[in-house]
Amino acid sequence: MGDGEVERAGMETDGGGEDRISALPDDLLCSILLRLGSTPAAGQTSLLSRRWRRLPSKLPRLLFPFPSTPPCVGPGIAANTAPVLRHVDVVCCDSPAGATATWLHLLAPRLAHDGVVYFRNTMSRRRLMAPHRGLGLASPSPTFELPCFATAAKLWLRLEFLNLELPRSGVFAHLTEMFLEHVDFNHRGRGDFGHTFSTPRCPLLRRLRIAMCTGIDTMGIYSDSLHHFELEFVPGLMELTLMAPGLRTLELLSCFYYIQEWNCSIHAPDLESLRWGDRFNIGSVRFVGFARLQQLAAFTIPVFGRPDNTIIQEFALLLGRFSAVYRLDLLLSYERANSPCHSNCECDEHPDWNEWEAIVHGLEEAEIRSFRGTEHDFNFVALLFLVSPALKKMTITLDCMADASEESCQKLREIVAGHPGACLEIHQNTSGVFYEFRQSNFTKTPDDHYYG
Image (cartoon, rainbow, N blue to C red; front, side):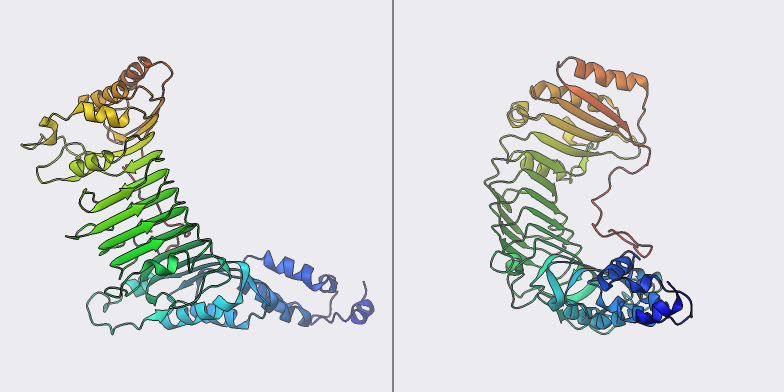
């Protein structure tokens, strides 16, 4: 194509050279821009020719990867003129609270019916270490109202403890997945927090995650559509009511610690997997309809207890709530030094093995992490096979300090060999990490200074 042909096609170039790409249709050019990986990168193509200058603002996708700054994100959102937005992915560094709230309000009405929003604000090390933080010298932050994303299918927000209030009205009519992390909801003493996530306002919600959030004391969720619910590190929660007849997976971690009086009521007749990492007592926790439970996971069971340690007793109460469990995941916690047991240690107690046998009789799969290889450990494995005739698979991860000798492995194999049809997997932990809590679903950045 010569220069005359370019001019006849209306494709003028600033550099005077041939421009073969600009003759392509707009939709094809936009598909090329979408593959550049970010909105700023697409904007830089405006230098190619005058025709390209209007294309980046028409893209139905906004991508601002880490470490985007407020002067880049704000104008980029405001300049977009696409009829609808199908995908928004923003990782902004040190965004002011007011700016974050403004951007969310700009985005909410523009989402397509299957639109997806991933919005994360990170805090830089410089800002994290500012002298006034944590000293009570900063002025109180204003509270902003979250807009109703009526057309979004997925909404993931991680906002560095922005003071946020849930929308007072509106229906998340198409929302199937909502993740809320690092938010201060400022909702204490203001009644039930969970109405927004219940069926009248989230009729299609299937997965909900609330993690590392503050300002919540009462939560009640009544959902016919919810299948997966994660509630992790919500300090100060005093009352949780969950009625979800279709719930399959529930994960509840570190919400009721350091609370004197608390109540938890869960009605989930179809629940199959329970991951419980919190306090438990019969007077405070009420399970209704867990007849289909297949898998139970619990954390940090101390092998050598102290007289004032109630974790083992609480775990025994938790296990006793279920007539049968087909997979049990336990984390055994050992002291680094081999210190003798305390007086009145749980080791000296004589448990009712008949009760244990009734609970684990149908157990088909078991996993033990941080296995140290003491005589107690081998006896426990042998006992578990003895009282669980249906046990078909045992997975053992050796502690990083354990002796991974062939003798120890052979001893385990001999225990399993006495039970035809059962298989054994042995893994060596060389990382020095006994257990890692489930990480955030958001991609980590260099500015992550605390749990995920």
